[in-house]
Image (tube, rainbow, N blue to C red; front, side, top):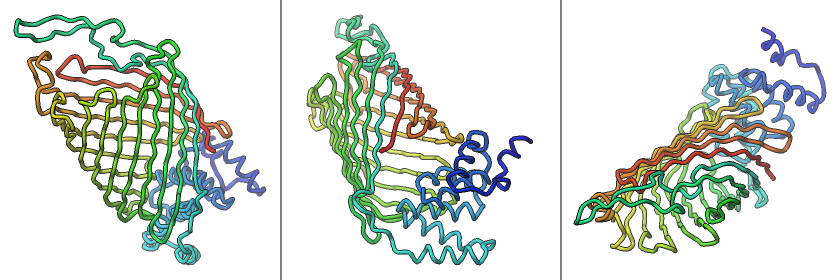
Length: 415
């Protein structure tokens, strides 16, 4: 009963927007499941022009009260404020069908709909920097088996892995930097870019040090419906040497699903060209289908990929490989904090034998499960977090079975 009284926004005293916001922020941890409170916080942030901050509480308000049209209207205002004009217009169109809308709200919607699509400047961008430390029980990604049996014409031959090839634990330090934004926007379309880099240092095992960088360019329709095309380039380095280079091309169509959670659906075609500079025989070319469902209002994403990876060298062990990946992500707001959960299952199967020395040239069959959990909160301009990751890869060939357990503590900051 006491919690309901403290979350009663009707009792807020008349004060300046800054003072009122400070009051609401102080109550956020205990009122984050109260739709009226979240609506009031989002509405205030909209009035203050802090549209990017209004998105999260308004999505929370809609999660608890999906049919509350004032929350839908404020959410549309926030979308318009961050430059997502087409998404705002689509939401307003569905909102006009609500018979409970009053005349003032209809006038406000009409005014919003008549606004031209904003021409976003090149400086419309967001950067993130992160620092983290943690422990990984398998920094080299090695099999957890210490010995296995080779099959030879003379029978089985037991082999024990060298100490340096076995799974080894280590602590690490990691730095992450990313920047994304809009390069150009015109009527109905926009060009977005994204660049990112990370470096992980393992003091007790320098051979496990690794870095990664990526560059993305995407042309899509403003809003939730229309064609898209993208290109991406990324590299993975270990101990100063490039061990993987990947070029991705994608094209397809985005759909608006017309739900209160502002769900969007992407269907497309993916093409990947993968190069292993230290092992050219493993190079391959992947072609497959993509389905990506994103519901910001529910904090839910579901992604499915399926296709075939063709070897560039006929001598590649395993030959053609069929691949499929399902990934489900859920972000649950908890006041000024949030819990992010991620589950992934991936299946890969070779179409021909991997090696005559492994199980008499049996085709390799791998099933990988990954579970990730991250709890994050805010401390002024910083977002500290603690994360856990579990990875289990099962295979019919023991050499490719592995397990990873990673614990991470760090923080991120936007700029």
